[in-house]
Length: 161
Picture: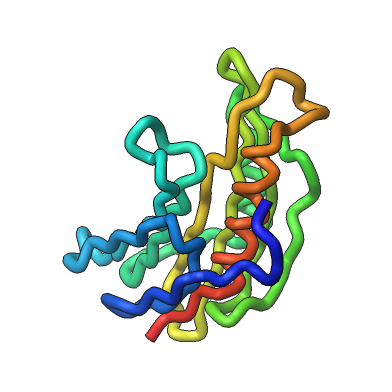
């Protein structure tokens, strides 16, 4: 697991600044598609699947922004998906946000961390990661736990420039 003393790498580019583990690689799409900018922070083995990859998107053209209650209600509609813990609202450097873990069961449990934010400039930001798959929903494996800690630390380091 990442320790609080572990030295992380700082990344700055294409309008974003964040910190990540030294063996992870940030990627950005410098051209917005329909007003949406996208970034990812990729673990070393992300070529094999998307487990651990942290996705970040910022939408400057979303006309009707869902309320946090609507976001949570929509999550509850997905078949086979459950919210692991109640959503928590928090204010991060990037704006007013709501975060929640969810779990689905497409053969094995897939845990996902999700954060939705509204920036002071009105843009909508979504950050999410599939943190891991495991067989018992009461016992996430060590990789899932490590990925969730990395997600939280990356999330708390994000700044838009």
